[in-house]
Image (cartoon, rainbow, N blue to C red):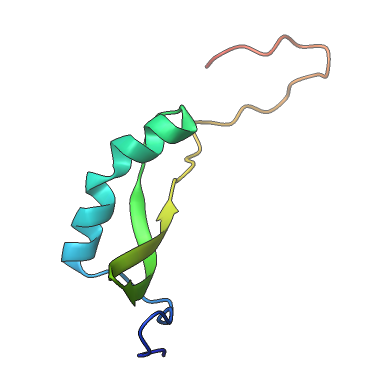
Length: 81
């Protein structure tokens, strides 16, 4: 772990306060990437102390299985189910 000014600390789980910071930036992230996220959950963080604190978040954008069909042929039309 780096405790030196300017050093980046080790990756860890975010605290509740840090999670709130990440969630507060969600719309900014969505605007910069020009997309909306169904799920947006910060799962890890690294911080850097400089003239303030820099936050580096890893955010989980989960993909979920909607459904599965079987017995289809290659020639079958792909349709919503």
